[in-house]
Image (cartoon, rainbow, N blue to C red; front, side):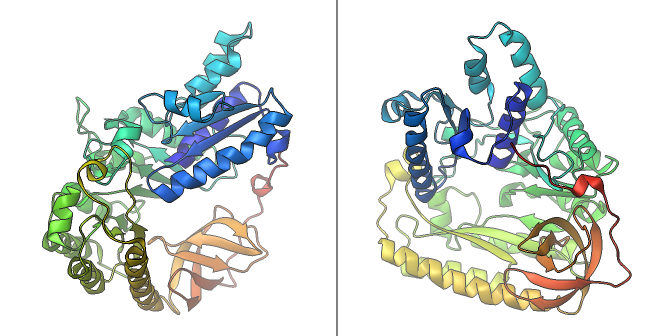
Length: 447
């Protein structure tokens, strides 16, 4: 979500005549877009912010903008006192305060604001920043902003506000705009993306939105995240199975494998119900190789979690054998229900021990799953060249690297996999495969 927000800020600034620079020392405006979903993320944001202070001291005219979840939607007075060297505080997904500040003393302010809004506002007519236009293969499209579910550990509803779905026509227009600028794959985003449309009067749901977007010419792949077990419907799964552009990759967090912990988290399902959902997903989407890949999220060390309760989470992950498990150690977030009502009583050392146990388990699971790809030929969408190798992803979101001198960016090509590991794979193109040379693949020089 922050990647999409940052693109909108960059686009808005270009609408005002600014250009990207790779050096903070050369910048007239620096925007720090923040995440605070975990304490480590907030600590990183604070450290980065203080590292910008010397630039402000050396260049007083420099504009520093703090944006995102660290600011939130309820005001920033405490941040102004804490960081007096910051000029602008912007809530998530809103370049408006920065645009207004930069144009306040200029005679053409109204015209420039209108231009910036045309570049960046969520009205469907979205223009990517110049250095990404016709060079970006995959893009994120927010479809649900905020969240109203309020899991007890989660800060998102307090920082990004209540759940709001964007109109389907607006989203479809944005996808068309992105495709016209060279994007081949889009990922629809929402804190609970399955709840898309539940707050709209005409109530198009996520399955209906996928069908609309599927009709966009030139779009090759569609993904969506993140799902919630309570809102993953049969209709949605049938839509994924039916539409060839929708990729067979589902991200559906479990968070814990113990029912009492799940209840304390206010997740709204049991471990057994989650297992049944995974079985249903596999039955509906595993019709051929490579079938469906499934990712989950798990928090270890939630307040009150005993070793026996953690063992149930470990056993659940071992039984389900999912493709990916995003792991996190619980950290209290100020203002959440868990922070107000529960005691963070699991020692940090114990959290790390549980984290590493799951990490080692998941490495074994992923390595075994990926080993079934060895020698197989899969379709890979190539995104960019990294350290001399082309990086791409399979339909099931597996990371693949290929060595080739051909310009592969944006191409979907069959790759025969010659090596597999838990986190990535390597392969080779068939000799008959050759990507056409395109001037759009030449990277621009940033200034």
